Amino acid sequence: MDNSTYNNTGFVGDDGKGGKESHEKSRSVELSIKSTNGFQASDDYEPYAHRDVQHPLTNSETMVHLLKVALGTGIFAMPNAFNHAGYVVGFIGTIILGSIATYCVHILVNLHYELCKWKKVPSMNYPRLAEAALQSGPESLQRYASIAPHVINIFLLTYQIGSSCIYVVFMATNLRALIVAFGLNIDVRLVMVIILLPLILINWVRKLKYLAPFATIGNIITIGSFGVIFYYVFREPLTFEGKRPYATLSEFPMFFDTVLFALEAIGVIMPLENEMKNPKDFRGVTGILNRAMFVIVSLYIGLGFVGYIRYGADIESTITINLPNEMLAQVAKAMIALGVFTTHAIACFVAVDIAWTEYIYKRIEKSERKLLWEYALRTGVVFITFILAVAIPNLGLFISLMGALALSTLGILFPAFLETIYKWNRTSGYTKAIIIFRNILICMIGLAGFVIGTLLSLKEIIKTYL
Image 1 (cartoon, rainbow, N blue to C red):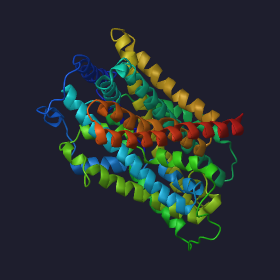
Image 2: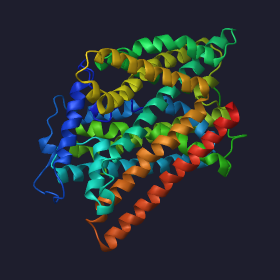
Image 3: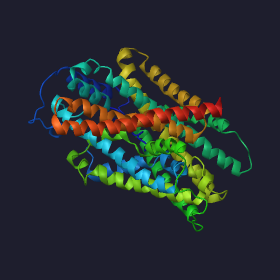
Image 4: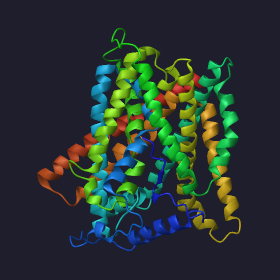
């Protein structure tokens, strides 16, 4: 999933004041957390009743937002993920990973609600939730509470910047395929150089509302591209000949991390739930989250399965590269690259917002050169994504690395770990044993994805480019 429309404090501020409003909101929650220590959970405090949302989201709007962030670059990599698992293991594995990811989101949302009741605050962001969880846990862990927000921010920044790198590689790869189709053989890195200046200029846009119309157009383009992809996939009869029902065990981590990158929207879940008119409808068996994830997992399985069955071992890191050298396919590639162009700007916007509001603005608040520092930060973030993309212009490896490095932790490991800490002194006996056993199992899955996936991805990157 593409979580780039939102930041770690809620919706990205577009007040044009360098994120001051967002910073003050984050700071107020931080002070609220620090001003309360060691008190019991309050049953008479209802966080939902104290939320003051200026433009709350309806249930249908929340559903649309969740579906919208699912239509990122990750879905185009699903056929390649199936190639690393086989169509049977890929089908079943995506369902299992989708279920685990959804369950971990439920853990995080429920923990968010409990901690808000405990701290008597209407809402928190992910970093402050981690801080509050450690404050509520065993005394031996409370000393690390102040470190927790920085750890979460590091992983959030890693994911946002990593996603932006993926967008650069995705755009350059598709544009190169388009250029090659017209008879000009060009290196993908040169394409990145060509698009660098436009990327810097669009990232100088300081108000999100000016990017929103382009993002809407990009979403429409992406949805339209699915029609083109499915047209070419089903243009001829599909055959299972030469397609593997299962792959080797050594290939599975690439499948695991690619699917996780595609499915996870951990950065968007809490902001969406915080902005809902009826947040209680987000949870539950038939809640917004489960309904959205059912549709999302179905879409990913559908494209991954039929894409692999169509192209088999010849599938590229993104299925768009497999489209034939026909005018309709070339137009689709160009339009998809254009849509991702705006997505890159929004992803960098989020990275800038985290760095600016959490670490920079508070140190230069009285400086007369705040605007200059902000533009320098925006340009620097774009350069970082550009340099990393030039160094590793392999979409499949980048997606796998980000899935392992950031999302195995933010989406699976941390939610289970934080819930265990919070529940440690609040449960006992059989209930406590079940929670600990369940969360240890989940943490092992997340940790395995993080360690094995990161090491294998780095090994392939070193082998390929060094």
